Length: 317
Picture 1 (tube, rainbow, N blue to C red):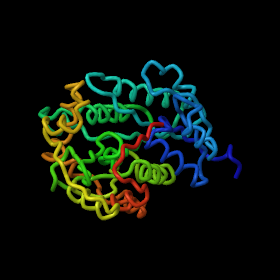
Picture 2 (picture 1 turned 90 degrees about the vertical axis):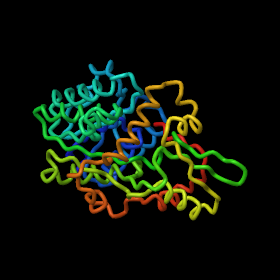
Picture 3 (picture 1 turned 45 degrees about the horizontal axis):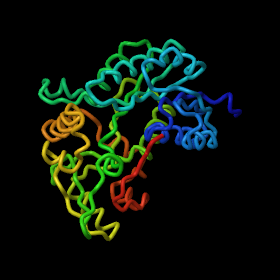
């Protein structure tokens, strides 16, 4: 089968953690062509995706780029859409998601897969503030009104957050690991760089069972205390849990967050939401992603694969 006879999938945010995973999995399957949208076509990540066979196309994920979105989706059968996190008080994430979906539909895309999250405002009756979750849920609601087949994936807390945004602090011979969750609270976590792609590949390869579905992507349910223990076990380093599950704790270990008080409110609101209401709705299938991808990384395997020893890591696309 020639390349042009394979279905074309457009991947928005292709050099992001989720986008790289999706692009790599789709191309690796040999079933699909991929048009990878990225703001910087000359970046190392973009060049890597091009070497794998992706068609690289300029596509900055900003609302003011919307006039170029429709052209980017031309001739595509499917599209994977995601929106990068936007710090409050900005509402650009909702606007961007809607414009991406509308442009894809206008261009004739037949099936959208959107990376969404639960509607925290709705689930908590407005008592918890987490617009990063709620805005993605509102985009999903908008997609449901459009004349297009659609499926939603929902990623867990990222393992990579502990490396990139909330890294440990070294004091003497001890690695202090602050988490925005209580030490013994078990929550769903996942590696977005390896788990997103297999899930999206399954949906595009076998779409009918997943039309209209919202599908959690989970590596494992694990507590911060268990994560610290695993880190010590894998690395041989002494490590201790530290609580960032309060305003004082969060700002003690990550004082830079204090520059945006609403961002602090969002991190705390997100964590309190997960603890008090559950990260996912009760009707979600928590086993699906690990059933279709038995190689999904646990936290311990993630540590072994990445060989991470506590330093800050950038996953910038």
